[in-house]
Image (tube, rainbow, N blue to C red; front, side, top):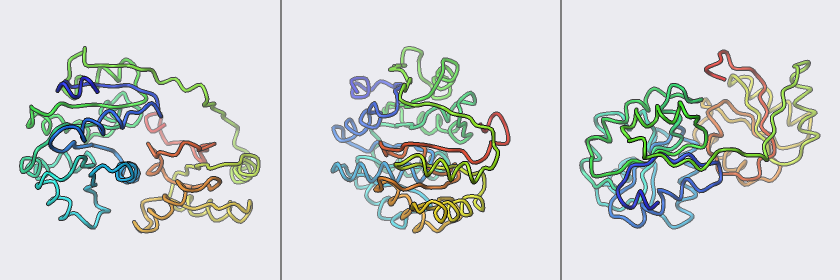
Length: 285
């Protein structure tokens, strides 16, 4: 935060739960202008938006799922927003750069910054297009945040975002409370059913297709008596939002989802994450 407030660009590698969001939220409130937060998923942005609003921060999202687009643009132009969350696909467009020129940008925060790097585990090509946007606003420092980046990925992030090597702060990313288990697949549904019966608390099951998501959610709910809801991009925005909100509020619900769900969701009591299918490539894995 000292670096951000001093106008210095920074790459921060910090473990989940260490307070990455605070490193841009507090400066955004303290400084004049709007902090533009580039984030990879609508579900993640709306989750962060709820947290920001709950803390009294003037924030908004600009996504395809938002009905208040014109109001958000007007609030930005009027200087009323501390935080503006957008996806990289929108941020890299010329019309968005034009919009930012009509207000004051105090900071660029690139969340899940490993997506910038082709060596990162969740590479998103549109993240590579962010540097020209940020170069157009040289007075606004850039803050890249990630919980998972090895040395090669860190170096690539610095290069892609135009930062110097000394801009990096590494607080570690080891999380000793997490364990990984791989089992031979014998009867996928039965194994998941047994997991839900043996493991209490909220959980996430990832499935490779929308059809598989809905099938598993229905069958697991019937077989275990627990509340199991689906989440995928084919559901209406209202249903997706309601299912996500129910999961965040629940102490025992299970959500079955495609990989469009979960990255960065601020829920501290998730007890298990299960994968019902193997990705099709090493890169996807």
